[in-house]
Image (cartoon, rainbow, N blue to C red):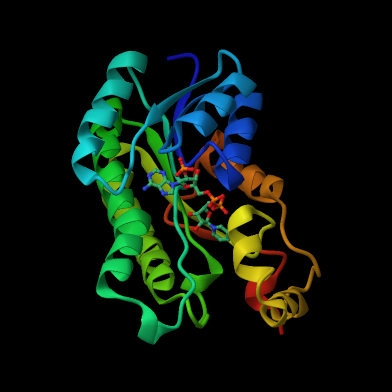
Length: 246
Ligand code: NDP
């Protein structure tokens, strides 16, 4: 039990990959879950001996119990789960089909519940563990054209509080990061095609810049570390003040 074992979903690129790097730097062995074998292999090769990967499409919920069992068998314990994987859909509300809405909810919310439930079963037996969700500014104010994403991220924040209360007696902490506008592929796709939105984002961010993946990874590491031992059920904005910007 000397070395901590973490799972980071969607850890082969974007924010997830930077979180993996931060964990590895701090001697946390990290199992990365994603769909893209090539990206997973490249990422694992970049952190020799400190990472492993498992291919899994998390929107296929029936695969999740076996995924967790396999990791538990191989590594005996799971200390940290970071539910980072997510998809984005930017479209006028009237154009979003029921199937598209369901797919975003399935990937960004339902799979987070299912994976957390399965990992919590093990963490309850261990009497310790940390679960970290990733939400978004979309959960805090009304952003047009991201209806399904907003619904999912608002759900994540509610689930953070409910899970934290229910799992606290078992020694499990559950927290959530709410990144503001961070410079990644996902945000570039949403902002670079829409200069007006980009201007709006920056003009209401008191720190006047987009966040870096490192800003998010540092906060993620803090929340799963012993330095945050008395913090549970919290939603921490990592947003350069965007949430309180005037
Ligand atoms: P990216 O699009 O760069 O990465 C998303 C990751 O999620 C990929 O590694 C992808 O893996 C994985 N993923 C997506 N769907 C599935 C699935 N069905 N099963 C398994 N893995 C999946 O996103 P970001 O790094 O920008 O975002 C990471 C998280 O942070 C998301 O939850 C996002 O909502 C949130 N966030 C991001 C912000 C930003 O500004 N970037 C702001 C606020 C929140 P694969 O490539 O293998 O499919």
